Image (cartoon, rainbow, N blue to C red; front, top):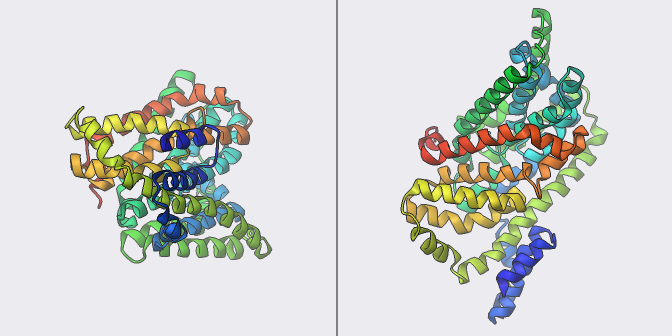
Length: 419
């Protein structure tokens, strides 16, 4: 009966955190093991007793301060210096600025919202279709869950009990591959459709744009450099980054007013609490997974189909794609990691970092695919383009992601080379 209760709640759009908690309550009652009710609250709290989870609200706060402090606009100008003169220059600028933002925000939905609002009108004014402008922005948002810092990597690292810093390192090469694949898509579409030629900055304009951007670049430097050189943990790097974002936005750019800080804290607290509560609820849902031996049952089924790790990952990719179409990516990571990771490690000897990169990239595709497609609807809302219009321009980018996923599934070293 429990699986039907779980599926029914999802179908009637009950928030995933409540689905997990209520399903656990139902399972305890149905199994008669009601003594578990006595430790229900402690079990939820235990799911949050992890230092690494502090990185989530801190990265969210950094992104909020960047938007408020005018750093996003300066990063876009800096991207113009490097790619602005190519044919289809604004599309490349959009993509490169998304890569800069991915190294700061770590959230695909937040990044899509910010960049769609900033880039779509500008691209449209230079002759790009609104659908393509929004599609490029939405595709660029897929870089956020792979290029560090990534909230999905933080959550996966906590659930899998892996060093989050190493998890971030595992995402660097796949993130660069994804960026290169998207640039290739823009080039091909530009040749076919005859995109407008870009305009290079003059030398003084380029210098001014880069100098103006330098303080904002301290943020990704602090995050990635601190982790790479072992100076700070991901959580400490997130705290340092949020402090730098505040000081740069307030003292250097003068756009972040101290009186707005309370509003930033409030938005961050609301957004972070939803993710944190989901993790707490997933911890009690773990009782269902443990007592029903779901990983063992699923392992028996999949190992009867194939013993090849690559084929296993291809099967998992199909499963995750379907799950990602129905459930938010972060919720899906919380739900699926305890079930599939033991199978990957114990039955197929797949490196947990490798599995995490493949899983997180796959699940974030659900942001851009119906019927849920939160990122798709955010891009539509912020740009004014219809979802169908965006999808028509988006499918080449989705094919590029599918190709990268196959390569990552086949070659483990692409994820583990830097660890």
